[in-house]
Image 1 (cartoon, helix red, strand yellow):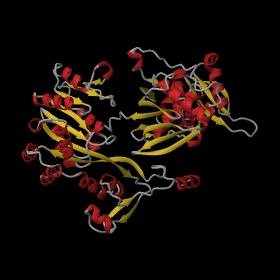
Image 2 (spheres, helix red, strand yellow; image 1 turned 120 degrees about the vertical axis):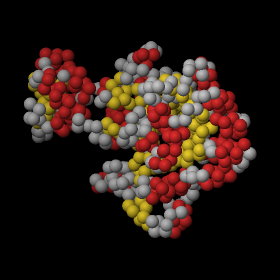
Image 3 (cartoon, one colour; image 1 turned 135 degrees about the vertical axis):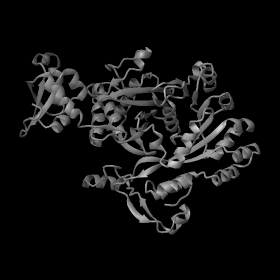
Image 4 (cartoon, rainbow, N blue to C red; image 1 turned 30 degrees about the horizontal axis):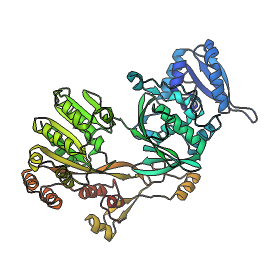
Length: 552
């Protein structure tokens, strides 16, 4: 039987009309399409494991098929044959760190699903949703298959489509922004916001209400900010979104952050491209005690780096605890994660005091933002614990200034601090559509590279150029015309040596401390990025952004 039908065709029919999970649960599979001439509809052959099932699921299947403009006929084959075909069809699509590469949505499909939702009666009502709003903690953490929403009403299908397609496109954030007469959705890809779809106000309001319901927020509350989390599975892969709403002039703005728990992402070998910096950082995090700081602006990947470091430390022999606001990654293993709950008095400082009574070996404090947390972290490091934390600072040396401004005594810094890893994220140039050219004189002077060195340049397109190339079928499938695909980190690692300790005690300037660190072999953020340019991983234009320079 399995040799009779095309697996790619079966997979395509499943994705368009039903869902893989639903087919498995109901022992159903679409097999083929019989062509026909208009006005007759094309007929899809649907196999079921038991014809008697049709009394329960037949109308559902017919309705789904009919809504998509097809008729259907039913045949019976064994459940074992259906499951075998479903297993083969499952292998036709692979979910990886770059998204659902073969799950094909066009922008027109997304817009259509959103516009179709506006045809439902009511305003932004979500009556009839079958989500469980129970406050039971076990239910709240349950992972619901996203395929259920794909088979729900129109707005549920639209919401599921947006979530799946944003993952496919490699988006880190989804912005749903209300305007006077319309609602715009933008996706942040590789650190840059890009237009996605624009829709009329009504379906946009209903979409926001649906997503709030999925995140277990109060859909009736529109004048106060709310936070929530959507946890779904899709084809046995976990999809987690952190959700936030805020009232604006024209309604609620909603931002959803995709929390990528892919094991390959949380890996120092993947994150830190430079082997020398990576090995030095590993030596620092493998010390028995002290404090290790990862610094950088918002969105620079600090949490990802620390999560990767903790996973390396998790060998089954250590008590590792974390205090996070919010918890972004499920680190698994033997790592115990605790959320900051300020409404209940559970702050970073209070959690740290609690941890010290829990026999910890390694402690992660999600962010050091006040003198109390800074001093408590230093005290914990001094008493024999290894402490990890993040800090908002532009460089490793300015991190020291931030800590001193938090009234941390210099003697505590020198006694506890082991190292500071400052980092930024640069966009990786698209290997498919980028071109090579020699450095200009100005670029050579800026980077310090030899004049004429071959580098890659991103072929960034305007919005009109993207539309035109898409029509012509020549738009780059990898980067969709942005010129970049993915991101790579640039790092500087300041190790607290004796000369650095002396500089801290003397409270030398940031620049002086940085000069000492560079003389001891530290690569600056810029120097590290230049090496990435030499390897043709990023561009001079990306480097200029972190250097506040206008070189192209």
